Image (cartoon, rainbow, N blue to C red; front, side, top):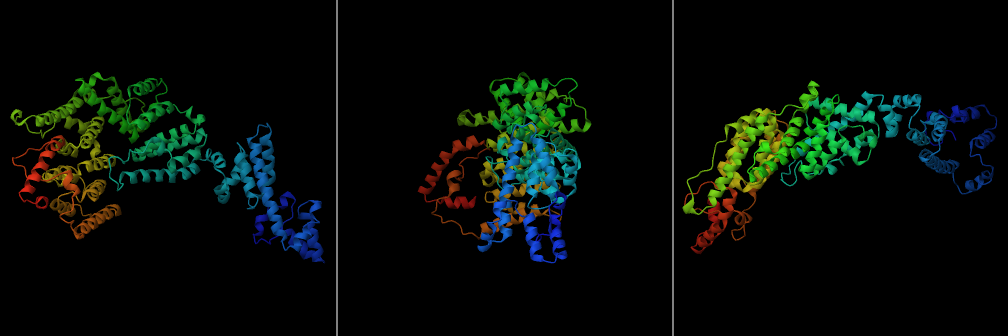
Length: 626
């Protein structure tokens, strides 16, 4: 009884309201009594467990040295667990008056909510009440300690009428989400197989922030609408497209949990569901294209505001990535069929959705919910110009395969169609497609086409070529051409990648500086030594640079110093590089060729090496000379 456990007396403040004596009562009794031992016995009798048969058993516990407090505590803990189980059973039952019973229990127990031993019971009752009395909610909200420990089911009832409080809870999660996305774009791991877009939609929805937000919302439509409003507001304020990703992920997370209360009222649900399947496959097939078009065409008059949310979902980089990859694939199919872009309904739909997604910010900002008019010249002029670049490349590749007596003096084109250059500067949809075509040729290891196209990316619509998403993908794709940075024509390729593109804006855009250093940290052993020394001087961070840039530069410097100190491999040891790209001096002047031509020449090169060995030449010396 009383304060024997060392707990503050205020913890028992609620007992008198329930007609139960507390430490203050015991203190008063002992102060005013003449026989303290009798008073204590009387207090124990009145306030102990009211079970007559127990009284005779208590002396046996005394004989065993078991304190009364320990005994009462064990019984109390057992009863508390039983009561909490009973509360859950009542709440999950089907009795019509089950919530009346819980409310009665809440009235009896709530005065003891500050008592640590009783608090779990009160919180259990609050958790299972679909509508907690307003007075009790206000008491919980006013007490920081109670608010902190109450279940999310109770907090939802508080949040739905307190948007500011809900915003305070959600804000750190939204910041964490953006930090995680941006960190992924600057990952030190450069790979075409494991990049920003590699995780499947389902995997992404298992992220900590999405799971927490989903739990906070539960089945509460009002809270869901609040989160969407937060995302729209932040997207407008920052133009950060990752908020669009979260909007789509949140809806599909609720879909995974079969929260029909929300999915059935979100007009974007079926559209997102279909698009999510396309993102998973990284392609929009003909069947799903028809479904998506049906949703867009089905927006009724008076409900145009839905276009605002649809545009946000299409502005999600994962959706945009899928749409543009599908566009490039569609163009390849048209080329093989000798067909024009204007003849493909699937292509026109992809461009329509790209245009709607790219216009998301303008639409939400202006509150004019109307599909942006697509520039038809993108279809009739830009895409044919881009296809002509493909034809140029294909023609040159075929010409290089011909026997020497049938070859012409055809050289690889160095200029681009004026229409192509103009549209990637003036039209955001055209620019997005142009950038992904550059990624496509990098994936094909087409060095010639890259050297032709990269200088044109210096001037693009809204500097999209210097955005983190494109640079993240480009640096990953360039790892496929790592050998080109150190080959005989490596100077030309390094110049195209760095001097003619990346270094044109690194001093004014710190993110470009970071991506340059990311790439070099991965490729420093491949880049020509002389060129690497020049790059290190150029990329040295100024004092005002962020810690991220300075750390990357320091790391690169350490790697270069370590590679200088490490002993060279024995000459007899087989070189991995030697087998992949043997270095020889060709007997006749060669023109730049595509990777296909280089692979065709490889066997002859190995023959020449064998011949040179038979004459006593040393291949290692050639490597050193190169």
